[in-house]
Image 1 (cartoon, rainbow, N blue to C red):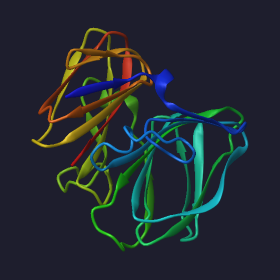
Image 2: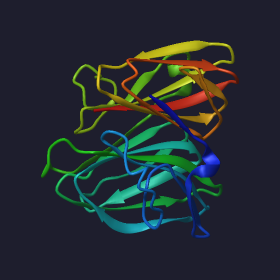
Image 3: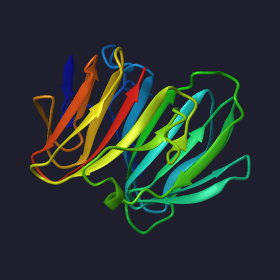
Length: 232
């Protein structure tokens, strides 16, 4: 089963400093047909104006993965963690039993990012945060795990969920595959470019929801950068 969610059909919020596009119901955007996809609960496509951001606020029982597309985001939390994540790189916050954090764009340019929330498998864990560089050149022509709850993905940032967040860059005309187990859910978004996914076309920032597709075959119609979540 495959469903394409064109970018122009996503939920919208414009706060001036923040322009948000919601793939799933979030905040004041509610669509009962777009509540979640497997354990994937949130995929926000955010544009954050220079020298603005999210003041301190709490989270709990969620794995929050931030994929920075352009610019950078700076994190601070009540555990003493702080750091800056640049374009192409990833940060993960396991909210566990509770964490208070802020996220600011301290740059002189707009920051664009995907913020992805995956439901935690176990409740009450110790909260944590981490960031890591993932050069785009090192995921050329293949899906590379960026965040993962599987033990074998030793180079990925850890999350507390039976899920993976993967990234790939694909040249026009190239085809790559990702194999999933049965009864899995995949959600794929081209950050840049135009793709064909299992026979359907997706433009930049469209969402593609796949269920029980054991192989995800992606052919780049244009040079593309893609992010995929595989969850139970």
